[in-house]
Image (spheres, each protein chain N blue to C red):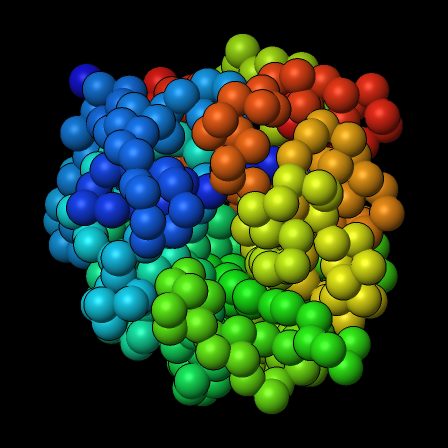
Length: 256
Length: 197
């Protein structure tokens, strides 16, 4: 039986892992390969590397560190950040990334998803969605959400975009619920449940993890395929071995 | 030391397999040259993408008959495994026909999502050196939308909605539907088993 995945997300700047409030107060966390190995050894099922400087500076993530990770790592990993074309994606996939994730460039030019799926197959194409509930109660997408100064709201409804992204060839959806992101009070179950109904491909929950119970809750009640988190792992608040044990005890299938 | 050749027909995950072999101490060569492939001790057919362009690339490289005539151990990985069968339902594509059977699309439903993406348990069905030392339970990393039904050549199965072939072998022809290069210690063990055949 397919297990549920635990995915730490690492922010990368100039080949180093950093943490902090995005674009402010970055703390150097260490070498990217060393941290990747540490998470692998702890039982991470997959890693996401997000090149935080790529997208705002309108260039793609660098191939050099992607290749370094690919040489050393024996679990799958996805690269996000500034991928705007088939050529960008090809460089990163050839460097050894298993998947590439597109977010704002896909909102600006939705055909990008079709082109990536046609070139590499849907299994490589992850669509990341930053979503926030507006005053009228609708969830809508945001572009450039990685940089508060550049973030813009679009009229596009999140649930419509989830449907369209799949039709265009998304092989997986990462739904980052910005309202709960960074707050550590749990995943946005209501939004993820609504997304789940429309999402026929794997759905990854993102934003809000603060405790082991939040992971149990999101798998049980929103039926997501994977849960992504960053600060809760980096800060040592949740250790992956204990998390997996707790999930297994709760009857959720995980890779030991 | 085995002389492993990775068939380079323009797929995109060749680097990862090559690095996985390097971690096992084997410096595999990439080649699309028939003479070089025939001379190898072990041949690996990687593949990410779709069946029809995958077969087209092999035809364009003049490798279809070369692969069919190999007698040394050969391993198809993911799409590379699917191409070993007679036919794939993906774009109704005739394949290499080195293994009996057909490849069909995984049937999804409300709880079975396609692509099948993630770590799934391998269920061994037969003893074989290719599965030597495999832990129990063993989990491997899958990413695919098509799969071969279990048949006489199935060594291990996995289940996603229905049961399908995860590891196959018939004589020198082997296949793994998952990505051993991304399946941690289990994948390393199975790759090591292959290069020890």
